[in-house]
Image (cartoon, rainbow, N blue to C red; front, top):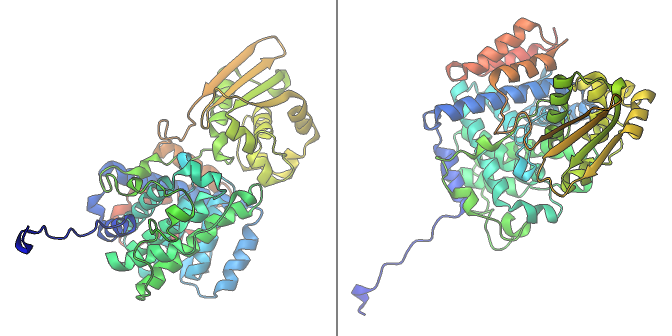
Length: 462
């Protein structure tokens, strides 16, 4: 074969980081299908409700003190009132979103996306006076990048090594959302992702402690810093995900599943896999709670008439939640026996049910220990739960759920999210303020300046 007939060299295909960077830099509101835009609004509204609820978090004041120590400027709003620096708002608001375990979850990877995506987006959008449409596109980019990177980690292997998705993957979502609003081109967005990956960390060694939630707050701040530094022209690796020497897919997993990053990008929206939580409790217990409320409402179950409760959970969920003591608020929010007991006692599951006066109440404690049995059931997969209640009159009531209220197959609609917002804001915002906030998110594309939205929160308590 002569030199003239030799085939031309083929340029290597771009790696997954470069593909995500081009997607993020090029995403515009018009590129997002109407169905997905409405879902992003749902997620934003739910995130705001979760943050308002987070003012009741036991560690919220400690995180606020750290945020204040990071800077004394007043350019971004804290979602429970007042102003802070960009870094302080990103940190505080992320913790508020996750503080009482009522934010979103991507169930296949146990990944809470919104604490890392929405706070840095709000901070940049407020500082720069961005439009609601720009904010919507930025949040969509952050959510989509987050879910795709989380899926590509090959979660079973990733989890086997002890990694916690929000801390490792979260900075990518924050970097995408902030980078979108900063107008980073594909090259600088690639550096932002690489800088985000250099800050990826967080393991399940912290399960049962507030640090498992701090992973989300730190992920938000890391994503913000990555985007801001990349905007200054700071350089980093051109491929942080699939690099053979220290790329995250190799370092944190077994090579990962890179096709999960790029397959159908911009056409199949993976952010639609996100579940929203209706109740403040462990994300893996939402199906159990859904089943319990179905029985309570269908049969008017009262705790006084209950002889025995048997709960079946998958072995993996049982290991995390089945025997956890309810000795403080955070553990109570994650304890399957306590949550089952308090739903039967109070016929409600909101923040009041996780105060010391309830989880330490002698009669509730005795009922939980003596009458509630939580068992692993190998026939159940994922977050599925079975509930059997034996009544004192001999009736046996049964309910099983494979999906929770709020899961993609049984989603919360806008009205249900507004109801959650109203419940979270009780005693904080006037009803008219809640309605104004919901209406503003509903018409987010028409909002000329995000500062109008943030002004509602800056004013704080009524």
